[in-house]
Image (cartoon, rainbow, N blue to C red; front, top):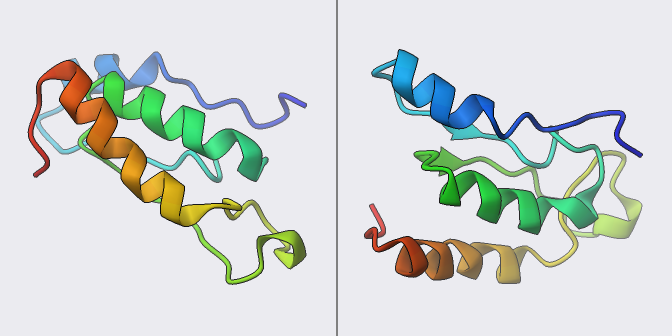
Length: 89
């Protein structure tokens, strides 16, 4: 179940070591679409500059890890940015 762990600790470290934007892929970083929303929120809370997520029109039939409720996922960042006092790009 943790075959594809997403190293959230690498986000603040990468931000400290690089001037480049840090974009996190919580869909491929987990291998399980059910974990994508929580890990996307965690990445943003850890100051990632953005997320990139694979989507599929029919997640149940997807051969990979597309999130089941993309609409809910797209609203999640707003709540994270409000909670940490940041603006939406």
